[in-house]
Length: 202
Image 1 (cartoon, rainbow, N blue to C red):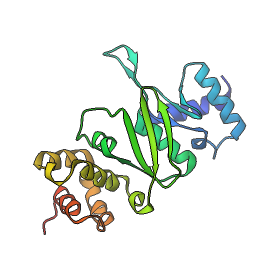
Image 2: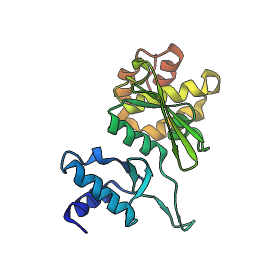
Image 3: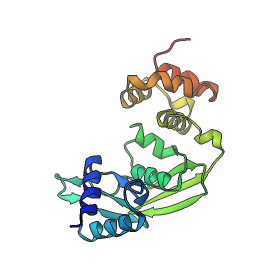
């Protein structure tokens, strides 16, 4: 194996199984042509997997099932966002799944994006980017937008204490302060629930 392949593989392994990436993730340290050749070679060798054009992942493996698992769609979405310098935000069923509010894996993952509307077939899933107003993807922190989109998808009537508890457990205390600041301009009822999640009282 060539030295550049070893270096790239070491970095991939360091990010752990499930990580998705493109050549953009390595371009600061290696020449573009070298990266393309190295990734193609690593894919042929079965060290990494080509997910879609220009996107690869370090596949997760299930010991229980004894097989390689499907790509992590959120990781693929983030890899594409880094590649094209888009800001993205999971919405609807994708947001619910990522926050642990739904155990059902969506067949269609939709992300709001400040880039063009595009669609990708990833394994048995569809990954769609929907061009959206910047205000919908303009949160400073990923957790903020994730919570706002999940609450929108649920609607006010379906938010109960178990939902609040699940979001709290998924996000963790250290995120509360910046989420409260980041979401001040959102719809009233959503912000009231965000304050409950973050433990702030009126």
